[in-house]
Length: 87
Image 1 (cartoon, one colour):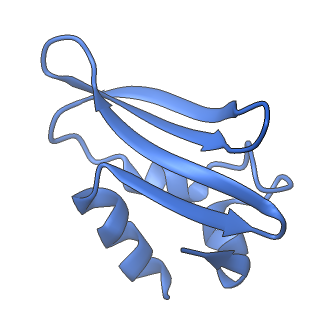
Image 2 (cartoon, rainbow, N blue to C red):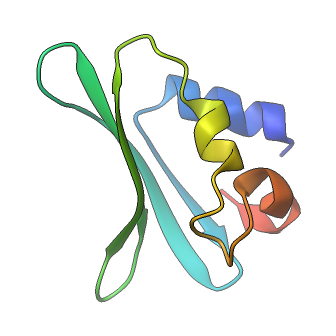
């Protein structure tokens, strides 16, 4: 899967599971208050941990921000680690 396909999936779907090396992650889009959406990425496991979270307005573009965030995946962004990510 290339980066553009991954971006399209994140834009269209409200949930996506992916793995990076030996960790499983869960990407979620959930309604927040009013016209906002909460975007979260969780590291799955016995003790789930939220590794990325932002609240945006509906219709606001968010994918590039998540793709380029370096706060999870061993200090790599999804764009940098894409060859090791599996859906």
